[in-house]
Length: 192
Ligand SMILES: [Mn+2]
Image (cartoon, rainbow, N blue to C red; front, side):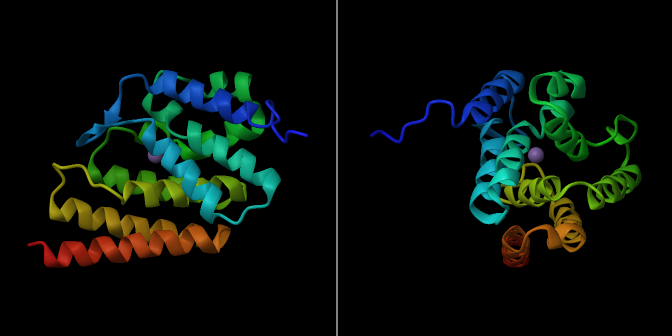
């Protein structure tokens, strides 16, 4: 008998199609050769291979990972996600999105924004915390070409704060993030 079950990944298929359409022709900032959708796919891969979440939570987490930047970076709204994917996934995506009130502000408000985002994530379900850890690990794989050393350095400090605050959600993702931070700091210290 074939083990092929066409409905097994329905939710995932739906999420990938939804996010691919939503991100459209977006590319990664400062890495214009990378279509945006590869970032959420990378985040989902981090979650799938390293989170250690139980299967039921893993499916939610990987779908949240695929959708995690749609509300923040595209015209998609939280209620669009709620309508199509239900409350659990919409709440996860909402926990990953910065408040409108702290978007597009100066650096000081951005730091406050991150602290607020982390306060929210601290009380969010474990699957959402895992997606945040994986998101930052993914973002540390290639820095935007125009970023200065100072910018990269403060982004790494922020990554350490995320690791310290949410690390308990997943030993595997915590370790992934810490090793990316260490590697990036080493590259930064030798590339003058
Ligand atoms: Mn992201």
